[in-house]
Length: 258
Ligand SMILES: NC(=O)c1ccc[n+]([C@@H]2O[C@H](COP(=O)([O-])OP(=O)(O)OC[C@H]3O[C@@H](n4cnc5c(N)ncnc54)[C@H](OP(=O)(O)O)[C@@H]3O)[C@@H](O)[C@H]2O)c1
Image 1: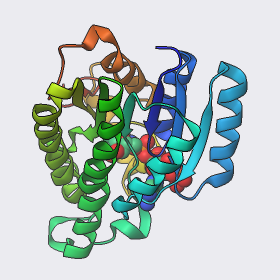
Image 2: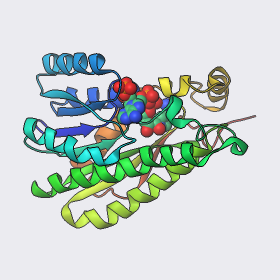
Image 3: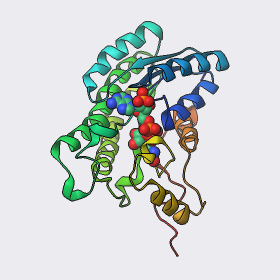
Image 4: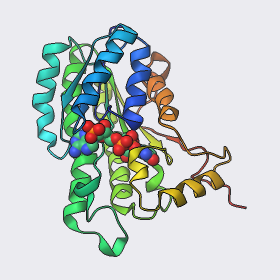
């Protein structure tokens, strides 16, 4: 895996950061994006380069403008000689999800469209650009983050949940059409993971308490709980796995309410 390159969106914190670190530890070069936390991103690039002896560089990206992925990849081409893995991880929050994050009766087209753009369109354009580069080196692996909020009712999550279902289906289509180029495409669907995204839930404490209650493992997920599966899916040991969604949820989807 050494000297390969991972391109990942949103690796300044949370799940993206944990995944990037996991890959960096294996000697994989990291091209990653930030949106608002430029200083944090540049510090991480420096830290990973020094600690793991890899090449790491941060680039600005706004997933509400998916077409900008094209210029982003051109920039990445100048700094990295290949793209082996692409992980669509970044997610929007705050003002951008107003009208998309909330109870059903308060949903509004603009907020819902923003979540579609950030979740599905950004995956599509990023994966297209990555696939063009992967084809040149005989293949690669593409992953989209998803969440079990499309399988179990999660208050306020209708906008995100429906778009996670959509991106999982997009993953299957991409897998069908990219397989003959040696490119595998999968999704990782996480249960509730303790990150800023979840802390932004108005009922964060209640969600946390509920997760601890229904998980047979008695705890909420941590970002690193998704990093191992992401790495595994990029290895040769996963070479016949494509078009799938892997659920990593601490047993919460089935639930253990007594
Ligand atoms: N947390 C959970 O419970 C959970 C569960 C299952 C799946 N997931 C999925 O896992 C992924 C990561 O979630 P997370 O909880 O780790 O998120 P997070 O902690 O909120 O981090 C979000 C990341 O996305 C970036 N970002 C924010 N707005 C952006 C924009 N407009 N354009 C580009 N990048 C932007 C942030 O960059 P800056 O720091 O620069 O702003 C940050 O790196 C998401 O796809 C999420 O749906 C999360």
